[in-house]
Amino acid sequence: MTKIDAARLWSLNHRLLMSVITTVAAEVGALGLEVKELFVLSEVDEHPYPAELAVALVMPKPTMTLYVKRLEAAGFLKREIDAADLRKHRLVVTPAGRKVMQRGLTLLADAFAARLGRLSGGEQAQLRGLLEKLV
Amino acid sequence: MTKIDAARLWSLNHRLLMSVITTVAAEVGALGLEVKELFVLSEVDEHPYPAELAVALVMPKPTMTLYVKRLEAAGFLKREIDAADLRKHRLVVTPAGRKVMQRGLTLLADAFAARLGRLSGGEQAQLRGLLEKLV
DNA sequence: TCGGGTTAGTTCAGGACTAAACCAGTTCAA
DNA sequence: TTGAACTGGTTTAGTCCTGAACTAACCCGA
Image (cartoon, rainbow over the protein chains, first blue to last red):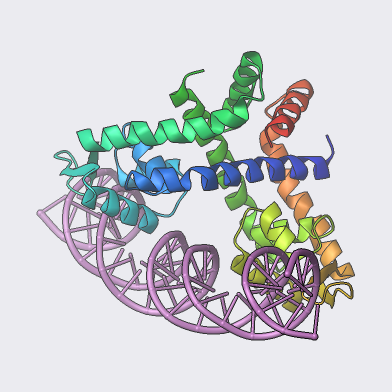
């Protein structure tokens, strides 16, 4: 694979993602959160602190502060002070948050699945395996 | 593949792209353009009008106006009025623009290739085939 | 040849994002 | 047990981006 081909590949991938985001934006918005907020919410279980989330999702800390604040205001998230380290804000997804999260992820997955539908089951598994090696 | 798995797959992919962007941002910036500007520039040959570019790259028209303006100011792009339709601005990549574009794409491709290096040649070909079916 | 509907591109105002600076709590060497 | 260096998180201030509204040019039917 030549270098320019790799760039082309990258570009293809980027366009795919942007396109999927814009198609679900309206429906996800109806749930009361933005697509990016949905991504944050969906990683809280795995990375329950803002700083960890920022690293995991490749975004600056102040941005994460903002998202957490919004999600908390919307009642999708709660903060608790970590007894072991008083600087840390342990994040907990509320029941309402969990419900919205699952609906949102379903919407997103449906839109992506509409694209994935062009692939066979075996190909989907392949793709997953390849991406996991890359990240 | 369940619905949540599809969302997970999407998330993996997104993270990969963001991560690659941030790693090349500094080097590409040294060339005198932003990563997103590079993407615009690289599609000008194929889509020589701002409106077409906006659709192709999945971004709003006002944003495209801004990028074209910057690229033009930097001397990487020229506008010509289309004789057949006076509303249209036909875009032409200048020699300087072409040089920067190739260097930028190489940087991007190298960064992506560094990730791709984790895959065998056969796997890379697989990935390419899968993504092309998806877009 | 008029005029309603459409498209290309821009402007502007307001919202989204983030770099820099900051405060508070933790850690650890002296 | 200090205090210097570090980490978690927020605030501020300013930049970047985009939805809405606009102008100019095109198209086409009556």
